[in-house]
Length: 217
Length: 217
DNA sequence: ATTATATCGATAAATAATTATCGATTGAAT
DNA sequence: ATTCAATCGATAATTATTTATCGATATAAT
Image (cartoon, rainbow over all chains, first blue to last red; front, side, top):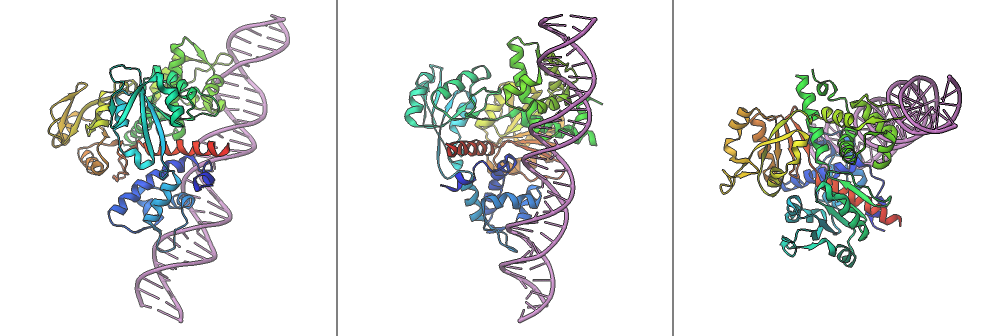
């Protein structure tokens, strides 16, 4: 039983949100030559509470030492392992429009262990073409290909109107988890995991904070 | 003093995340012909707790009626107003790479009251060109243009390496809030608002849930 | 007209998350 | 060698968020 398996499910959402933030920060620090770092320093730079940082890090690492802090390389390694960045996750993508093509050409996903194997679309003009080495297939081929490849994760980058049908097709093909970039709520069976990438929510938070800031002055 | 101003700052982050979700759902329902909807029904479809839905909606609306529920159109209007979707927010974008161009060509932002006025980049090959009617300027022009346009929000879609310098330039130009798509933590003065669009965090949550699901079986 | 029921909105209870406190430990300075 | 300061990790207190309960009310059915 791997570390990830033991610990999965017991971590809070807020913590899961912060871990990748720590990771970015730590990589930056490492690249600047730092070897050790304290939770206090992380908290200060990231504007977080030091106890919170320590608690988060305690979940993934036990290399913290009084007076010294954490070994940066160890910590990075611990977080990457914990988040499953080290074992590659194969995925497929549905919808090779602008956003879909952007994701297909983005190479940064490999840093998170994400590997987009192929894409699906209905547009005959692009079927058969490749983007960043990833071939685009007709959605007809979805079920067959997903089953053969043994993929569990699907990315949805189709329009709002087509999202539910694409979702249904993915589930029918055996997909267990969906990363949804379409601005709609997908209705799925109990056991299927949906993670919504919610640009509108993010924007709402930003403009709410800005509004608060402006009305304080 | 507007409704948004009065209420800004007192809404919890989780609620602010859910409101756009309700909005998507309600628009869908409206398009399917629904006129009224109850918090119970929303909760069921969205897999939320009905009391939570009622509490969230109580923040933005007072049109709920026993036995009938909410008038969908009113509710949509209330949420849009509350989230500030009705008053247009002008923004500029820095970094007209793949992601930047995708955002520039996305027309869905207008639904949230977001209007991208212009973009900045350093690549001489694209400076002067237009994407979706939005002109790309050299970053030299940033300060002057932002001041003249009176823009308060900037979107960062440059690479991780260039994010901090772009951020500094935006702040120097007078930007108050930054929507950051680069996978790094930006360090900013106290009064500047940063909202990070964190794909890695989203992915981490997805794969954590999937891991938990798989190890339960 | 009366009754039954679905729903709201308010209040209370329970749970989750954050922040504060404190003793223990390590490494550096005297 | 001893003292001092920084830090960790654990526990406790606080705060935020979610969930449960309940009375009031509007609509529909009898």
